[in-house]
Amino acid sequence: MNAPSSPVRFDDARPRALAVAYDVAAEGTDVLLVRDVLGRFALVVDDRTKDIPALRSAAWSERLASELQRYSADRPLLLSSELFSADDLLGSDRAQPDPLRQPPTGHGSVRILDNTVVGQDWAHVSTPSVEPDGTRTHRTALYGFKGGVGRTTATAMLARYLADQGHVVLVVDLDLESPGAGPLLAAGTLPPRHGIVDQLVESAVGNADGLELVAPTGYRPSTGRGELWVAPARGRDTPDVAYSYVDKLNRVYADIPGMGFSDRLETAVRASEGAVACESESGRRPDVVLLDSRAGIHDIAAVTISRLCDLALLFGADNRQTWGGYGDLFAAWRSSGQARAIREKLRMVASMVPDSPQRPMDTYLESFREHSWECFSVLYDDDVPEPQSGRLVPGAFSPSLEDDSAPHHPIPILFEPGLIGLDADSAPGWQDRAFVQAAYRQFLTTATLLITADPQNYEGPR
Image (cartoon, rainbow, N blue to C red; front, top):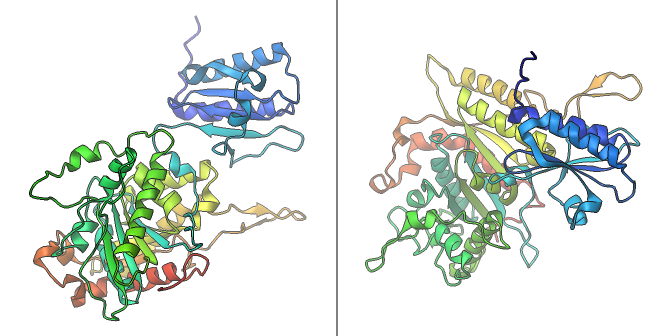
């Protein structure tokens, strides 16, 4: 009696399905591999320019069903001639070529269309859109795979520093499940009546006009020219109407016909930017926007990093959780073919760096840099052979471990125990204390250079 075969698991299904897809493409026809929200695969074969014999089609279908088992679709193979909207499916801009392998000359193409319930924006990298007048505000995302790495405090410090340089700065609190930037920056001042969650909820029913989304923080920069505004996640309470934050939050991710969550989130950010220009006495739009992103592999973080920002500062500590989490995220970008697009946006931040006799700062940062370089290496170009000699040479973008301008090279923020559990309301002026300034000095100067260095994305204070 034959022993039962091992079941095909989720991780097994993709390479098995691709193997079949490449064999089909070897016969000269283009194919599209479609994975549904449960992870099951179907192969769409383009027979519009080449006739596919029925027996051949049946053989491919049987092979897919046998190879994939539970991860085979009910109809494993479809011909484009059988589909009502073949052009829309085969021409989908969400379908991507396999980044790890290309069919040889004479073979058909192989593309992959991956359907997911959440997280689709991790795999679709784009640049922020341009304003109707041709300008574009520079947006920087501050993100940590794990919480508790000092991301929000760094956001507040960077916002004030940029305002001191004469910039109109807007901080948008996108950590909707755990708002922090709004309360920290607006401590002692009156927050706006509405928050980002209000814009998301009201826009879903066409009711977003007239929302009060931003407020000045009350900070007066030393130059007298900069401004600092905040768009909090949560609006303020009023005596006559209860603010139902949890009820609103439970609805912000709802599907809206004709407008995906990523579009709605970008609309909320743009509405906040426009509100600054309307409410500011100077009439200036923000020229720098800081997006305090939600931690973890979450849709908000996906949209913020992949779509909304020009620069993403990735916070982390030198531990297994940091490198394991970023490793999974970077591997997903590589497998979706987005490595080259996304790496241009990224820069690592070593947060809460210790400096003690037991663990000196230089030793810690050296270890951090090595682990960061190993993690980022999946986003860098692999070594490629020279055409004549076959000798391996570095790819077009393959920075060394010591390259201090590379995405993996950490920007340090020193550990300061006085900032743990900070209550901004009871500690006014905490940002100006000498120990705080020392802890953030290198981060502030380096991050500012990164934000203001690209003339294509940044136009300076207006």
